[in-house]
Length: 145
Image (cartoon, rainbow, N blue to C red):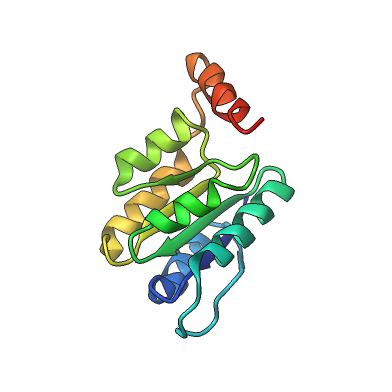
């Protein structure tokens, strides 16, 4: 399993924490930046991560900004990508189970490290349910056409 991770300046503090969590769970992680806390524009990093996930079939992504909102909006503009803003383990689990989300988004200013860990574990350990949800995900993807 491979994850691409990117942040903006408001999410960079959690990046190393998340990378370590993923690595200890046996996940390959590719850091797409930024690499300093200098101010950057989140759409640039959301696009970079979403495109990497789209081009690397079967991979996933994590995007972190202050609230997670901007990252999720920007990532969802990349055709073929489903990015979900999650605030707890339940929303992360449902993002995978019902929406087959490939990218997990959250806010550093919103979640504590303990919650981030539970969100990541839920995202990692939940598989898409398929069934009635498959048709709904297909309808979401057709909106892009």
